[in-house]
Length: 186
Image 1 (cartoon, one colour):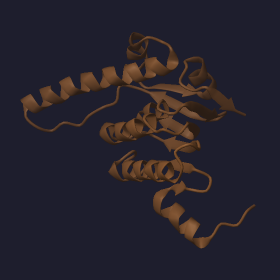
Image 2 (cartoon, one colour):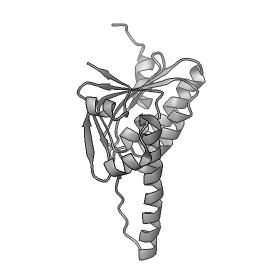
Image 3 (cartoon, helix red, strand yellow):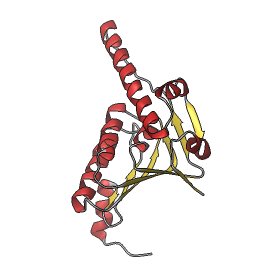
């Protein structure tokens, strides 16, 4: 195995990105996909694109989900990245993690990986009007999520609306059959 310079190792642990191999590691923070995870991922993408706009990027995902706002920030950056992005799921891509996975140009899952899709949930403790506003926003967010799954899977958004009504936990093979991943690594 090749030896890495100390500066490279320090940089990796600071940003969860390895510039030489153009690899970004996307896991969960204390609260899943939170603001810190999003900051690191977005910073990592910008760092890799700045280093070379032509070479592909590899993203390893092991995520149980998290905040929709932070997850969609990562999704948007990955989706609009000028480099070809291949994402590998090792462990799990659940909830927001499964949405982020859909932004990759090529989606790969290890044979024992797990995908979970669902409508998500919100905690709202406020006035009735605030609750109503969050409910309306949730409907819009869910429609957006159904469109993302539909776009990548080739199945209609109405299919995903039904599937996401409760937690749908999928093996690697089931995720491939539904079009959520492109390839399974054995």
